[in-house]
Length: 371
Ligand code: SAM
Ligand code: SF4
Ligand code: SF4
Image 1 (cartoon, rainbow, N blue to C red):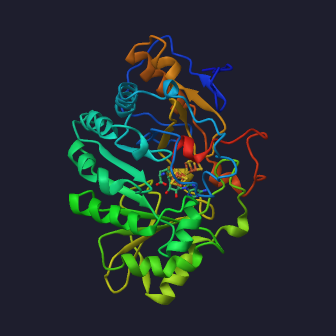
Image 2: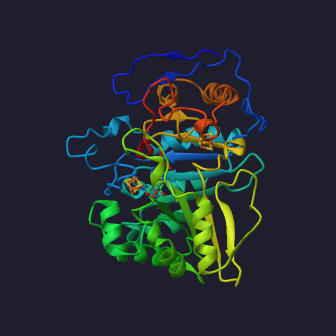
Image 3: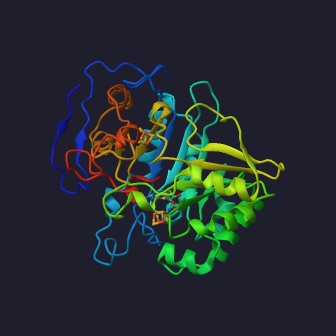
């Protein structure tokens, strides 16, 4: 299949309109990419906007008042998202994660959750539907999300110390509100909740033990994420990455921890537990330990471009097909062709390449395709 690269009036990242195969073979659940990886996990960015300005994701200097976010007409509608999600599910997707930007800023998100909850796998199983949020408005929305069919939430929280947290979100947002969001989410049954902490050496690594102590003894699973070189705006430097091995060493010295088996193949977080039985933690070593070999994740941007890797420089413009009068069978076949051609394994190659890969082309930003 050859993709045509065409300029689009509102295009943000290079994207090609996917070729629609002349003979549309239906999905048979056996889809695999060039490295034999199936398609299981779809992350959908529902907005490119956010009320935080975390320096590692949407630094204020770039995402200021002059920054042009996508106009509403560019965004996939809930009907379009649900339609395309159904086609991905036919290809083997079992898990859908809503993300952004800040997904809870998308108006009436619970309506989308309800629409997606009505989908089922070809075997008739319900989908695993989850959401990653900064929790700024979670306390207010948790109940309606739960009622709409959301199963779990993952909350991002980078520090317990209020001053450090306010500095990191760069929106002067207090820790207490995030903790309240977590509490309400737990109460309405959106658990087990995971909390993601991006660790930046010298910025919040001294919060590791305090964060661990806070969630130890609760059902909440705290995960430490290595600060990644996503996008092109966060000024990433390797010396600001604290390798997960060092996070584990610090936790082990303080509490005693031991590794546990993964839940399933392709799981992003490496699982650990406290030896005293007081809970589970995880580390996500995106930089120091590539996990591309089992990567079964696809990402759909706010404006309907499909990205095959978090570090991709090119998307596949599914919105052009959705709005171009194509039948479901044709779009489903096009998605199959795209996945069959996938060979992305950026993190595995990172070490062997200069930091700026992709022939100098601009990598997609995290707030645009989600985490
Ligand atoms: N706004 C929501 C939130 O913060 O949870 C959802 C979108 S955010 C892009 C998804 C996840 O990506 C968050 O857990 C965030 O901490 C993580 N993230 C963003 N930039 C990152 C980076 N440079 N390195 C590692 N993780 C990053
Ligand atoms: Fe917003 Fe999430 Fe990015 Fe922080 S990590 S700026 S909360 S999208
Ligand atoms: Fe998947 Fe790309 Fe991350 Fe590798 S670098 S794990 S292929 S998203």
